[in-house]
Length: 523
Image (cartoon, rainbow, N blue to C red; front, side, top):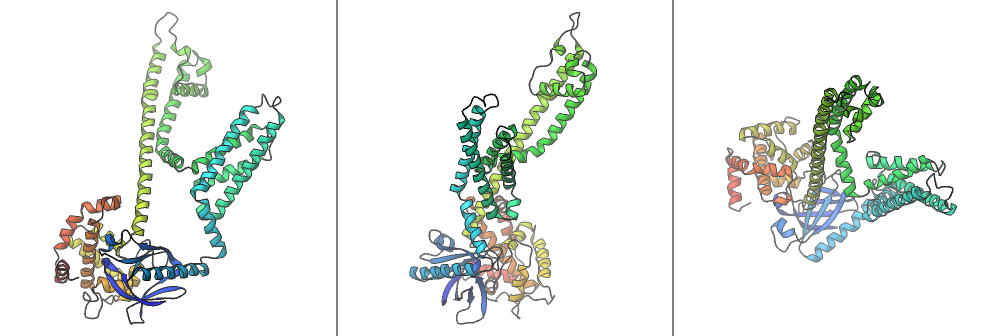
């Protein structure tokens, strides 16, 4: 397919480009030119979306028929989105269908899409679906109900009087559940093999539980070990139900700080046990004759049990035993009324903090996905965001841009042409990598107007371009709705207006000319 069409590049500007689609790539060039500006490997196109409801809002143009192409973040284009405009709905439909057919064929023939990978992808898609996970959760609940029935009807005391047919049904059901859970584990391992499977703690929990279930098949049905192993199967439901998984994860994260409080609690009970052994060993040998007995007695008291009767009795003459009374008061106030309350407070505080953190991570992940699907940003945005957040004043920004230029100008030639600039920014430490094309370079330099006489970016021209791009980024961020911003974006916007004012106080006449032209509507 060979045609001229309109594409969006930097700063929401639509530009005419020539597009040639082969069986492996979509290539772009200037109209009437054969020099390739950029290309997209068709096998790396992840989504093809027709811009409908939000196209006017994003592009500031009415009646636009546009197509959005999402690329693989680990591929050649570093996850960048491309926007293609057609002159009619029919033309857009033709381009979309062409892309769908060729992308599907390219993925099939790609080295990354072998028959095994394709099968693994399809199995994973089914396995992570909500209906499959719900079915597994139902099986786990049914297995637990079966375990409860077995404990009630086939206890050790009543096993001889129970109808043997019930025992047979219970055994057959447990065998069926074991087979189903083993199948579920094998499917999970195949769909996520290898690193994604072994690095997930919930998968490791499934592996341990299912392994114990298989071991239990070789043991006697009436063995208490078998019943314990079968009862443990129900904990797998925590990894299947999202709300339960979230609670367990938050509790696990909260237990680490609480461990310090538990250590203090253990030490204080141990100290109390040593003192109680010395003071009350003869008075109450049953509870305080040895350290282990004293520790267990004090632990029971900490858990809410009453104090031993011997410590609460008065002396033989009827007077108060102040040694035992003082010990009871100090121990109760220190541990029971103070430290246990602190433990609950620390656990609750960390649980709330962990839950809030997980909610924020989910919200940011959802916002990032929405932003990626609606991406109309500058490909330099990661670099621009870092610069915009870090600089303190205009001189500091100049110093940062000077250091950045030295990193990009590897050959120390004092000039960056389009090819050198695009290759250099892709080597910067950002994930995904920054992908720039010749068209992007032409756009940020206003078709070379901001370059030097050689058509390159010298140190001064580079600073001019980057200051302008930071200014455009700040303006676009200010236009975002509150719900579209992450927490870091909100923090950035608190100082956005101030930094924009600093950017307005430019010292380079070239920037002042461009800014004035933009305000006049000439760009």
